[in-house]
Length: 312
Ligand SMILES: O=C(O)CNC(=O)[C@H](CS)NC(=O)CCC(=O)C(=O)O
Figure 1 (spheres, rainbow, N blue to C red):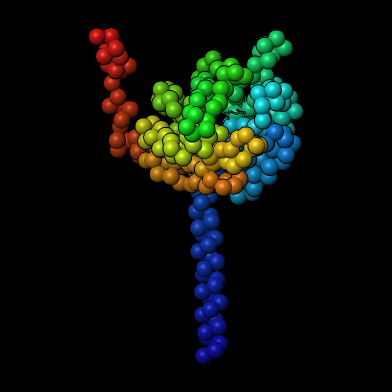
Figure 2 (cartoon, rainbow, N blue to C red; figure 1 turned 120 degrees about the horizontal axis):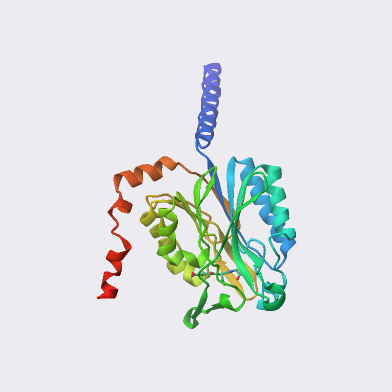
């Protein structure tokens, strides 16, 4: 009796282990994206170490592309500090990341790099740049944030003037083919402009990315609603890495790095407390079936149709 119960116990354990293994393997049937959240400070080296750990962990867990937020390099405590810490694409920070991508053979979305502008020596202005690095360590795309966050919300304690140090990007960039799908590039505040997401969708995006450093007040009110709306309108996956928590005495971010599927369902949420990541399987069949079943892109009228009210 005792013996047989024992065997039953062991068999049950064995079966449970098999099921676990099967579940684990089933999460690997599609390419995996890691959507990260960090608490960057003005300390660039510490920020790199923290991001590197997340990238290594994501790779170990099977991710083929890792998404880091706006300000992954640093969040400065003053305009002066933000400017003086900036670098060019050929500087140390980006070369550390290209080496990391090459060594781990993983793709990276670096969500908002403080990039010295073309006339840095004379005007000390930067771009806010979203950089895609492939698994060989090459920079394959650079998108420069086109909508700048100049916002005063006195009753919410929000006052930021991004244009005081940043040049608006000159253009959108075409979606990039990656191991998880075709990725359209935005940054943070760009999320509020559906024109941008539609333009990316029309040119082939299957995944939209909005690496962010949302304020706590605007994040609580708008973040998830906007991300899900962009996913539903475009029938794309939306992956949004985020900054979370306190960066320095004057600034905190909302967190909740999010992964949303083309139906608008939240697949993963990093919460509002601490750094971390969510791993999501990107099943591009979901993009196809959502678009097939409800072909809103085909139902959309031409641009003239929507402008007709302004002209009359
Ligand atoms: O300043 C840096 O170093 C990095 N850049 C940012 O943090 C940017 C510009 S201040 N933040 C946002 O766009 C927040 C948007 C937002 O919170 C909203 O749209 O509600």
